[in-house]
Amino acid sequence: MAGLDTTGSNPDVSLLYDINGLAGDSPDWLTGSVAFVGEYGLLLALVLLVIWCWWGQRKRATLDDAASSVAAVVWAPLAAGLAVLVNVPIRGFVERRRPFKDHDGLELLVHGKTDFSFVSDHATLAMALGVGLFVANRKFGLVGIALALLEGFCRVFMGVHYPTDVVGGFALGTAVVLLLSPLAMAVLTPVAKAVGRTGRGGRLVWAGARDEAVSELPRRAASEAESESGAGAGAGSDERDLAA
Image (cartoon, rainbow, N blue to C red; front, side):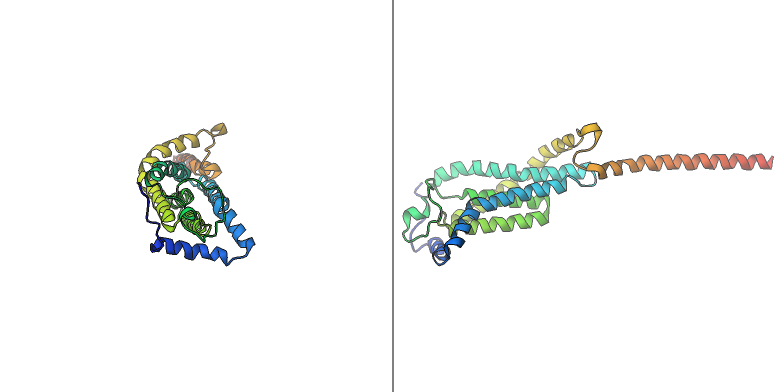
């Protein structure tokens, strides 16, 4: 395929110059920081956010709640990886060159990019993780989506992607997460529930001590009911003896 329009009259190119032009007016320490954050830092932050969310979701009150929540969190990185795999044939089909190869005057903050530009792997990964977290937990998801948007801005600021590369990555990551989420939950939730029952000594893995406490409530209630029934029967017997 010939690729997307790369002429200077294209608003996509104009926006590229506007955003990347900020790098030319920024101090070296800032451009260096953005380059590191845009290449590695934000994706690492999203991975840590997924781990944090997983750690909280696994301690839900009941095993069913914990298993479904854990499954949703696990789906986020799986969907991100799947979205990147889907992007491989898309890149080969579109064959859009990196912007710095077709346009002069760009501030290139990261060198060595030789693959095609559309769609952005970083944007795809970031938004898939953000939307996947949103499915599992809205608070974590909103933070994840905000980090994904920042990732997209950084990729254009660094001069390695057009804005439409980023938008395409956002769309691809979101589509993979949402479209395949029902199937993923149907598969992952029973697996998470089975894993949750395999703790040491029969302790539930996902729900922790709180789930054990909840499971004790019916037994305690039954025991107390039996005690009260026995006490009532004893009192009735004493009353009959006195009457006699």
